[in-house]
Amino acid sequence: MAFLRLSLTASSFIVAGSGCLEDKLLVCWKDMSHILGIQRLACFGGVVFAVVIIFQYFEFPYGDIISSLFSATKIHVTKTGSYPPENSSPPSKILGDITQGANSTGPSDVLVKGITTTYKGHDEGIREYNRSETKKKLNDSTDLNRNGVSRNKDISLEKVRESGSGFSRDNVTILTVPLANVSTVIEVPRKKQKGKVVSVSEMYDILVHNRASSRSMKPRWSSRPDQELEEAKLQIENAPLNEDDYNLHPSVFRNVSVFRRSYELMEKTLKVYIYKEGDKPIFNQPEAIMKGIYASEGWFMMQMKKSKRFVTKKPKEAHLFYIPYSSKILKATLSPYAHDRQSVVPYLKSYLDMISGRYSFWNRTAGSDHFLVACHDWGPEETRQIMGTCIRAICNTDIEKEDFELGKDVSLPETNVRDRQNPLRELGGKSPSKRTVFAFFAGKMHGSLRQILLRYWENKDPDMKIFGKLPQVKDDRNYVNYMKSSKFCICAKGSEVNSPRVVEAIFYECVPVIISDNFVPPFFEFLDWESFAVFIQEKDIPNLKTILLSIRNKRYLEMHQRVKQVQQHFLWHVKPVRYDIFHMILHSIWYNRVLRVNSR
Ligand SMILES: *[C@@H]1O[C@H](CO)[C@@H](O)[C@H](O)[C@H]1NC(C)=O
Ligand SMILES: *[C@@H]1O[C@H](CO)[C@@H](O)[C@H](O)[C@H]1NC(C)=O
Ligand SMILES: *[C@@H]1O[C@H](CO)[C@@H](O)[C@H](O)[C@H]1NC(C)=O
Ligand SMILES: *[C@@H]1O[C@H](CO)[C@@H](O)[C@H](O)[C@H]1NC(C)=O
Ligand SMILES: *[C@@H]1O[C@H](CO)[C@@H](O)[C@H](O)[C@H]1NC(C)=O
Ligand SMILES: *[C@@H]1O[C@H](CO)[C@@H](O)[C@H](O)[C@H]1NC(C)=O
Ligand SMILES: *[C@@H]1O[C@H](CO)[C@@H](O)[C@H](O)[C@H]1NC(C)=O
Image: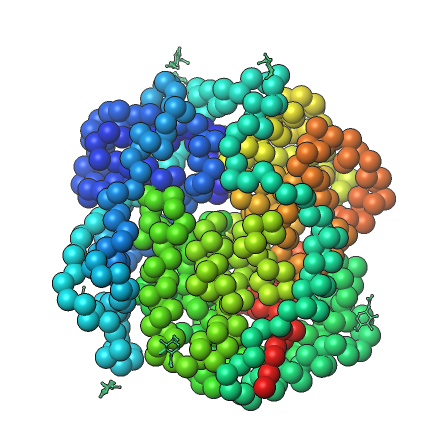
């Protein structure tokens, strides 16, 4: 159910009058698992179809992600009184005037399952962290709950998965925007329209500038790991020229010698301490998020926790401290209805207060040797204030939003994992001469940019296979076949700058065409993105074909070759291998830590 494949007909979002709220997932307050059978009658009596534009702020539910959650029968979470879940916006307000009458066939196989979350709160405004449900390993006497009476609410969260035949795309008018008028599309309200576009080369200048000018805070006291980082830094800065590693391809790197040196030093040196604290499944439960488009955070967490080489149980040896949370599960658990990204901050804050109260590590560097890995759209904003000093590996990397600091933060690849047992299934694609489709895009109408793309290119030109959501078929056969047999794969941003298509294109050996202003692509520190991907400014959508046609065949073949060369760095393996995506993510975090080290 990846977002690329959810049609605009996500308009098939349904809000039921009878207590069902909607938030890209349909969520019901009441336990509906028993009334699944009559759901269509009871719940969807007042079905409303909604146009997707409105859902700019929302990303969509990925059944598999949540379904793995359901194995956890009960999640206990402490919440403060300041965030009353029952006050989330009513559907009527969300949908406003975008509803349209339609054939309300309703979902024929909507899945309703539930998790139970206990929210506890008090009004004093002091965040307490109630860990009693988790297996206690540590002395809990520091735990809070000093503040007397808790207002407890038991809320069953129900998630309905949109799936399958009920949503017949062909019967739904997708966009009401008239084809002739681009301006109407551009007027779709965006969170920001300001500022200029930062090109990839300008981003690189900023990176160089930030490297020169910014250091992390001087630690309160010195440590052995700091000294080791200083030594590593010196060695990286004086990396010997070394480009003859069969396993690395210099042409996709900015400077492969520096990369090699840094990578080897990471293997030799790096130790990571992982905090054990935190309620599952939000913390320390990677199994909950191993599929779908946010799976990067689950896969990273899983492989980090299992790493014998890099993990240390002795925090005094650690160069980095990992805060092992899932931004997707956090959102799905604590704030499934709300659209206010700040709503989850108090919870994270209470976690941080607990960690920094219990251990001295956070305070030593004000968090600058701590890191987190978060792929959900909300990741940057929910961590900006309270964890802004950390190294944040995030998918949603918009350099214009000041949520992402080049040189400190890391652009985390968004990967759409379709098969958890075999993430490499279907790897690869056709050779260039057999790629018969010139350019391809398909996806749901998140954000306004894709509407513009479709209005210019859908059904306009036989070379340009530009679609909304493709009809649902098993394993996304259609979609995957297009990716495997197209020369250029258009990666147009959705509601946010990032899209799983970028990595998907590389996976299927299609040259990515990135249309997403101010997006900082993954592993930006090291990869020479312009050597294997095409960057087109959003305003140039009308010239899309002309620009792509201007790429000579020789150049195309070169880019295609490099896509294949860079591919290894974007692959999840069930057991991690050298230079794979797990190691690349960890390496970027390591590298940014090393270069910013500031020892006593
Ligand atoms: C529903 O679909 C049928 C057949 O396509 C069509 O005749 C009818 O007008 C549609 N109703 C609405 C409300 O769109
Ligand atoms: C927990 O810590 C408190 C104060 O630091 C101490 O008095 C108590 O004995 C500890 N309890 C356990 C079980 O370690
Ligand atoms: C913490 O949560 C547990 C389980 O929900 C509950 O029994 C306990 O009373 C809570 N503690 C406080 C102080 O609220
Ligand atoms: C559209 O809806 C009508 C009636 O609801 C149905 O008969 C028809 O098969 C639908 N068309 C598609 C393409 O799903
Ligand atoms: C397009 O927009 C212009 C200006 O907003 C308007 O005058 C014109 O009628 C529109 N055309 C169509 C086909 O909607
Ligand atoms: C790569 O970095 C090394 C060490 O800093 C430097 O000597 C070399 O000239 C750089 N190579 C390129 C291609 O910039
Ligand atoms: C770290 O700093 C915070 C805020 O200044 C303080 O409350 C906490 O007790 C400190 N932690 C330790 C372990 O000293």
